[in-house]
Structure formats: structure tokens, C-alpha cells
Image: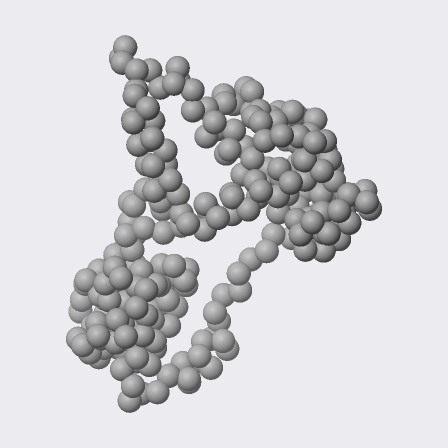
Length: 260
């Protein structure tokens, strides 16, 4: 990031300060997001090198970004496609899904931002790129593409999972609690269930309130309180206090504390 962009109040940030900023951004980025960005950028630069001999220099020419979109939403040159597969850059010869193309352009845009390149000079914000992505999505929809959605654990899926849990095993009791908790609290994501903590439960009459401290859609940590009713409330009341030991034994990588 150019230091001239980091001048404030007449003071220039030191190289140490710049490194601290990078560490701060890195710490605030989810591991999965970081890995996805790295993979997408690695693919883009490998493709750019084969197509145009493009070195990893920012900003990327707008025309090259448009070419990337065209190559991956339409029919790519057969020789180029084969070269990408032979080099291990692509797994198979075919076009990308439009969602994958959009994600890779988003990663490239973020890389430009991290380099301190202003939006006006970011090729991913250029009208030609935006229009190409928009039309590419339209074409994909007409061809039958629809955004992928995770299937909800409906009752026909939930009960077979519950039936695998033995009533006489502490770990299985915990797993039943997790399943009921995930369903009753509004079909929570796996990451939210894995980070659930007993201390965030508050008894209310015969039920519970649960304080969800953060989620994928709440990265600012404003939090959300949800009501746990029915069987979820019952099993949470009978879940033994010694469940902490079971959590440690069953999932040693969960080091933040006991799972619900």
C-alpha cells in the first residue's frame, strides 16, 4: 500500500506501522476466505502468463481481465484449455461456472485494493469488466444456471442423524444437543454450531435464550439472541455439566471452550 495514502494529521506511518496494518487485515480475514483468495489469484496469474506472458504486476490491464471473463464463460481456445489442464492449473477441460468467475474477479479486485490502487484505477471496477460479468450471468441463467444453495437439514434428514446417537453415551448426548440446537435456533451454519458455548445460554421459564455473538453475516459482532424451544430446550437442560470433558476428548481442535 503506497505510504502517501497513509498520511494523516501530518504524520507519516513507519514501515513498522504498515506491517501492523497488514497483520490487522490478515487477522480480520477468515481462513477460508484467505485460502480462496490465494487459490483464485494463483489461477489467474497462471492463466495470464500462458495467455499473454503477463508478469504479476498491478494494475492488470482491463483488456486482460475482460479476456479472462470471456475465456471462462464461453468457449476457451482448445489449446489453451489443454495447456491449463496439463500444467495442473485446471482439473478438467471446460468453462467455469459464472459464480467461480465472479469470485475470481472479486479476489483480483481485492488484491488491487490491497496494493493501494484506487477504485478509479482498479480494472475490476471498469465498465467493460462489470458489463461482461453482468452479461455472463444473464447468459448462464438463460442456460439454466441458478445460485447454489446449501440444503437445509429438514426433519427427514435430521431424524436419521439423531437415531445414530446412543442415549447412554455422553458424546452422543452432546451430539443430539448440537443437532437440536442447530435446528431450533434457526438452522445455524456449521461454523456457528461449532463455536456455540454453554455460557451463552440463558434459562427462560422452561426454554432458553441463546446469544449468538457473531456469524458469517454479522462480522461486526453486533450479536443476535434466539429462542430455543421444544426438544432442544429439554435436551439442553439434561445435558450433563461434565460435557466439557467429552468436548475435549471428542474434538480436541475446539480449544475455545466447550461446545453446547
